[in-house]
Image (cartoon, rainbow, N blue to C red; front, side, top):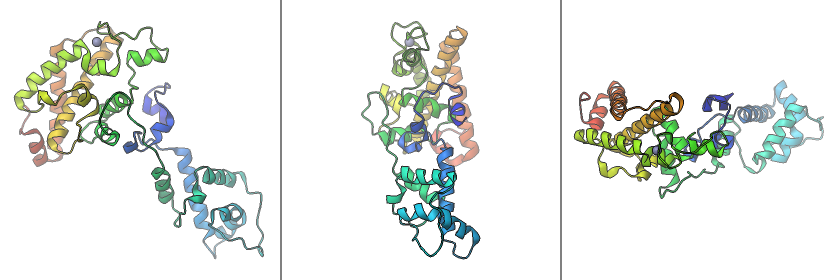
Length: 307
Ligand SMILES: [Zn+2]
């Protein structure tokens, strides 16, 4: 159900293992419900075996000591009875512990958070797809930067994984009849084409830069195919870079909306409407920033009110 919520349909566009990873490792931080329940069960069980005077401690030791001692967490006392055939719930915990390599982890304190942190520390980073010379950690920090709203984050993150459902992607999945750009170009509609090479994209970038640069917000020199897809080379460290990255993502959002209108409603949106939509979204962003922190917003946008 969680994956259906993330994708908005039953069609999953990326491996589940990637989605479950932390955001800094290229995932989306989707909670792994099964593992969370198992981790909490195991941590509670280990804590219970350490309770000397309580009935729950005796119960846990009776069933769990035979497998917990192999993890170095319990000593076997042969003067008291043990079950060598634990119930199926405990067997599931044992299989999880061995599968996750917890016996060799050397954990001394057992709590859900510590077990979780141990499993997170073993995660490997998924590399972004496409040709880029940017460092992967910077790309993942850029695409999920807090200066973007959720919709923009989703588009940027899926573009970095090259799993945005463009015609090229859908054609490879046998879900589209053609991979040609819906705007009538001869090229296939992949992510680079959609956001940078397409005739509609070139026109919108031209219009936006000419109108936005009057406010000195987005220098034309900072725009390249790579910076549009993956963000600034050094990350969004300053309010100025955050502002530029947000404008870039607003334009990407508008291009994606225009493409969807063309595909699903068979209607072309004229560039002036696209520019107006871009300006409205920018205005929304400025107003949200002002509502949060006036001084920071003035430093970031350099204006009191959007003009
Ligand atoms: Zn095109």
